[in-house]
Length: 97
Image (cartoon, rainbow, N blue to C red; front, side, top):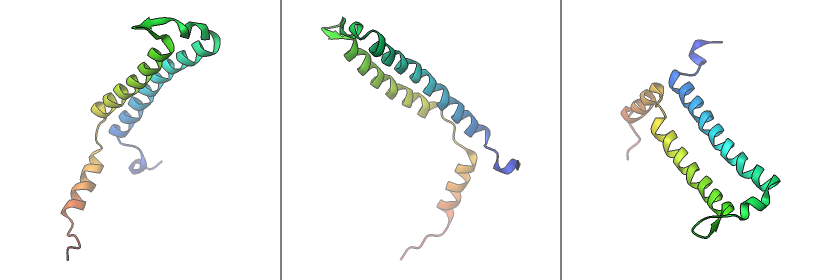
């Protein structure tokens, strides 16, 4: 394999981070699906302010997905090669009429 084609350390970090966050979410979502599949009656339990477990868990999953997206966005590292390409594109003379 050519070393110039191998992913940069930043890209590898971003990939691992994304996979880790996906697995965290997958575990929580799997719990939701398993409860619905094998103990659906548990979803009817009132857990918060008159709301049942299904509603609270479902909205919790949505909110948690947004939090994970924010975490990924904050921790994601920028690839230096992308910075160079952006700077070169900005410095190149444009077709202004």
